[in-house]
Every structure is written in structure tokens, then in C-alpha cells.
Length: 221
Length: 288
Figure 1: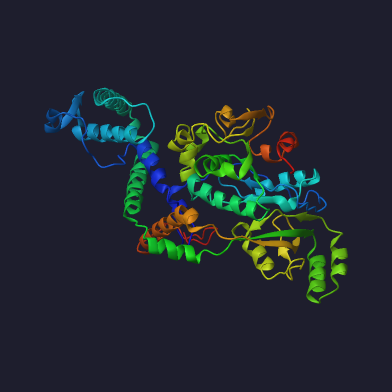
Figure 2: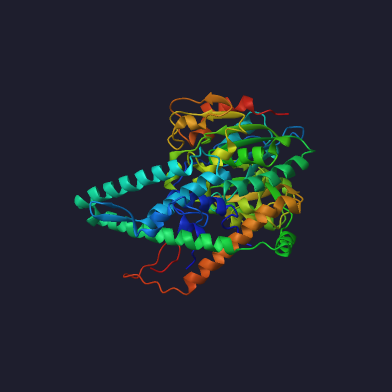
């Protein structure tokens, strides 16, 4: 029998995710002059969350070899700790790509991790483009139903949200049909793009309407 | 070292304590009067008393919170009035709920018992957190044990039938010309991965990838969660330098704390006697 901390302290709710299962086979491309991008998943999710987005971007001329999916343990670690991991990760990605600036694309709670990294850990020196999809910038009442450290940080009015004080945003994609970010307007921060009335929280990651809006925001070079 | 709960559990628990009304800082000057302290109770409502300790507890919690957070602050007199009103109202509403028989509702009874357990569990974790120390030498040795991160990029071919997967694996095993293998695999859908870290990969997948040189195919087919089999080719491998010590300190502290918490939990569990009325094996192998 194995107990661990989350068993005792966490009540899990699933955020919607999606994995593309070999829907297509885009031709492998690797343009070394392309700009690297780091994808940061949401709470209780994993790097597979970005499979569909990766396929879409590859089909649209982005290099898969410049796509990095950052995994973190959202059930155990505070977003502040995850942001420290992200800082080290992005620094390495930049270093291994000739010191290029890095684009960060984050979904849901991943956007809060990225904002902490940008605001509190000097992230904007390396991360010059940040796009958040369905991030509860001002907190979400859905997080009242879970009890991980990140959940407390995602709650409206948390000390984490207050400390960020609206800083660190750049581009945000949001939908007023997002039932996880509650109120849905909490996903607005910086320059905002409303993705449509019928876009659910997970759909922001893989639905064409969302990806079509996302694509021009990601610089290739 | 296990990646368990973070160093920032301190912050987490601070929030937790505030939501549950626990004082996160030990009681200091409460602002309550000496007459109040001399009394056995703070107020009496419908012949029921509210203990003075309840007032002190809530007042101290809120006072500590507003001292340590960027929130609108009120002076002690106003805070005292707010706390008084809150306590009286809570007591009155509770009395009304009891008069309606709500305290005997099985769900209410269960919820109260669960809240009691949760509170004690939180206090225990909080105490443990306050006891953990982070010696420089422990941090340095933990840092020394951290390996350089390695990233992999792979091509995954999805083969539906086991016989076809076996045939391709046998070609790989027998050192068949790579071009012939490439050609055989062209018939199957494939997916090029992003850069993946070891910790983000499925252990079975990792086992297949780790021994590979660039452009090699794995000599074992990996079962796919979507059905069928995966034939894996390593496209690229990239070793990163680990972050400097100063950038790792908070992470290392988090790992030390998590390990301490996990050790505490393991010890408690190991010494516990757990019984269930019906013998049953749960999906994850736990006996119930």
C-alpha cells in the first residue's frame, strides 16, 4: 500500500485535455533558423495536451524540432516552484538554440506558472512572446473544488493572484463558453482574443478556430 | 529524490489556514481587552456561550493575515467589531440550523467529522513544515546528484497488427538495411514528437529509447494506448547543462520538504492498522 501527499490532500478534478492520435502525418521539418517555442500545459494535465497543436503548427510550416513541451507536476508543486523549473527549462532551450528568445504558449494554469516566471523570475529577458489560452488570470472558482497548492493559487483573490497583480500577460485567448475558468472573463489579460461562443476549455488547445487565431501570434523567426 | 510537495507548501498552507480560520502565526497581542480575557466567555446568545478563545482565535487570524498580505487593512477597533458581528451571526445561524434538526442530518455529521480530520491533518503537515531545515551542505549534495537534463525527439510509427509490428521488429533485430526498414515503415502513419524530457515520457517508451543512437529504431514495439503498436525511431537527442546552484535552491528545498513529508506519511502508514469490512483488491493493487 502506498500513500503519498496528494492522496491525502488532493481531490482531483479533470481539466479537459485532448490528444491527437496519429490523425495525420505531417512531413518532418526542421528549420534551424526558426524560433523555439515552449508549451506549458494546465493543471492535472501533461505534455500530450499539445499534440494537436503541434500537428497543426507543423502543417503550417513551423518546425517540430523547435517545439518543446514542458511538463511539470501540477498536483504536487506550487506554481511558484513550477515557475522555477520553467525558468531553468526556458534558459536551456534558449542556450541550445543560439541564445534566441523563446515563445511561451500556455494553457490554463500553465499561464499562471508562466506569468510567475515572467514577473518574479526575470522571464521576460528570454521569453519575448507569451500567449495564454484559457488561463484563469484572475482566478477561477472551479479551483475551490480541488486542494493542491496550485488550486489554492488559482482561486480568485489568492495571495498568488494578488502578488501577480495583473502583470506578466501579453496575449490571451479566451471563450465565454469556458466552464473551467469561472468567470470566463478571468481569462482576459493583456491583448485579448475572444475565440467564440462555443469553445470549451480543452477546445482552446485543439479546435481549428482557436488554432487559427493562435497561429499569427507565434513568430516563426 | 521524489518530487513531492513543494517548498511553497508554506504559502499553500498559509492560504489553507486562512480559509479554515487557523492562525498562521502564533498568538500575539490580540487587541482584546483585559476584561475580555478575564471572562470565561465572550458573549452569551440565547443562553449559549461563545468562548473568549473563539474571539481571540478569529481576531488573531485576521489580524495576522492583514499584516502579512497586501489587503485593505482596518484598525484593531474596527476589526474587533467585524469579528464580533461575524461570531454572533455565525452562532445565531447555527442555532437556527440546529433548531431545524440540521445538525442530526447524516451528511452534516459526516462533513463535520471530515472537517475535523482535515484540520488536524493540516496542522500536522504545518508543524512538520516548520520543523524542516535546509542545511547548505544538504542542498549542495542534492544539487550534485541532479543530472544534466536530456531531451529526446522521436518519430513514432503506428502499426495496427501485432504480426506486422513483429515483422518490422525482426527486420530491425536482424540489422536489415536501414533503407529497407524506412521503406517498410512508410506504409504506416507516423508522428514526430516535440522535444521530450525523460520525466515526461512513459517508462516503457523510455526503456525503448534510452539505448538508441540517433536515427536508430527501437528493437521492441511499444503497445499503444490507442490500440496497435508503436515502432520508435530516435530523431535527435540534446543534453542541457543543469541550471546553476542559485537557480536550483528553491527547487531543491521543495524536494527536500516533499521527501520529509513523504517519509512522515510512510512512517505513519507503516505503523497503522487498516481494516476493511470486505476483502477486495482495488485496481491499483491495494487490498481492501
